[in-house]
Length: 246
Image (cartoon, rainbow, N blue to C red):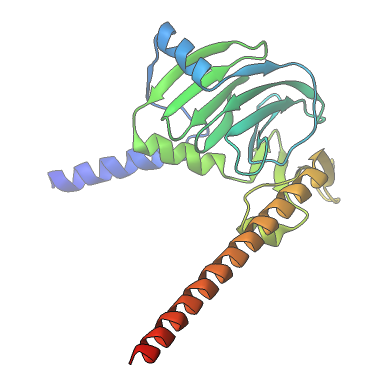
C-alpha cells in the first residue's frame, strides 16, 4: 500500500512539473565572482542597434508580447545572437554570446533567461545589458523540461498563436532552423478567418544556410567516394601483385 501511495505521489509531482507554464528551475545561485567569470567565458555583449536578420533556432514570447529569438551567427557556429522584438517585430535590444552546445531562450516575466545545456547553467538578463542572476541547474528533469519547451515551434500568448515557419519545411528534417515567425490572431467575431501577420522574416539568410548545408553534404559524398575508390584501387593493386609473384 505504501509503495502505491509513493508511486502515485511521484506521478502527481511529475504531472504538476510538466504542466507548469513557468519554467522555474531548481538551481544553485552562482556567487558574484563565478557569475562574472561565466559571463566573461560566454563573451556576453549587449546590443542596442538592429542588424541583419538571421535564421531562428528557437524563440519565446513574453506575456507583454515581446519576442525573443536565438540564432546562430553562421551554420554550426558556437557564436550566437539573441534579439528581442516588440509585438510588431521592431527591434528593441539584443545580446551576442558564445555557446558550446545547445542553448535555449525563454522569458521569465520580462527578464530574458538563457539556458546553456552543456554547462547546466541559466542566466537572467534585463533590457539594459545587465545579468541579474546566474544559476547552476541541478536536475536532469529540469534540463529535459527546458529543452522540450525550447524546441517547440509554437507559442500561445494573449489569445494569439506564434509559429515558426520555413520556406522549405521538408528540409527541417536536416536543419532545425526557421526563417519566419507568423502571428495568428483570431477574428474579432470568432467566426471569420484569423488574421495572419509575419512578425519576422529572414528567408534570404536561411537560403544561405541551406546552400552551406548542401555543399557540406556534397563534400562528404565526394570525399566518401574518393576514399572508397582509392581503397578499391589499393586492393586491386595488392591482388595483382600477389598474382604476379605466384
